[in-house]
Image 1 (cartoon, rainbow, N blue to C red):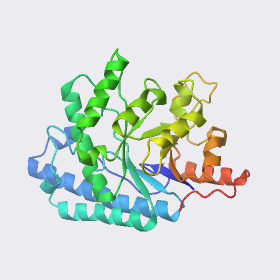
Image 2: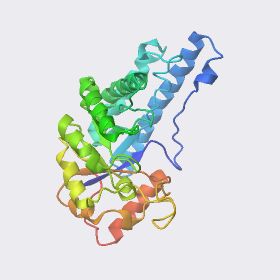
Image 3: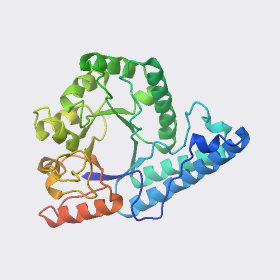
Length: 311
């Protein structure tokens, strides 16, 4: 069984998540800031309920939760503890209802923090802020029963070997609530799967294999070999990422994502693997839920009518 996952937002569905900026909130006294943040957090919790209902009703097996689901949670000026918000009890209860819904309907939820999460940074302040953000996301992950908080390796800072050691050391220092959910993903510029697999094995952190990034930033290892190696790092259902290049593989820049997935970019090995192994593929396509529906239809029309996309 292959579970397809929708990433964060919708293209056509009227389900929206809100944000606030620190600049905007700075014009208000603290009490008003917290009231506005509370309203946004409650709105987002209810939007998550709507999002999960949609994916459940449409054969989509997973949903990536936006890392700003609680906006400005760890901001140095506007940050807050959830209990600071006037509606905190309703907010937490609503998120926990989302978690219960996911259990009933077998929906997998994940987090993918923004690119400023840099555990490999040589700057202690950057690492400290990164850990704060991971702790916040682990708190929400606990409410919604999410089992993945996925990050990239970060920068190489002129010395990839030292950066990887820093990354390993910081992972080993993380609180259990974070480390038990943390995953590493290969990126399209710096860290290949081969770079990260040794860290995954040493720390017990699974590898989220992004095949598009691997095609952009190759280490010479095949998709089949890398898939098998990635699966071995998981103690639960493996997670992969799939996207297609906006300008095609002959374009000057293959990194940006297309609106849709070219079925030819879906590894045949993954299709064959779906006959005997359960795994999740998050679809990183700009057309979001439309792209997932289109991909399902195209694959099932082309000699894979047996394929099940969710349990």
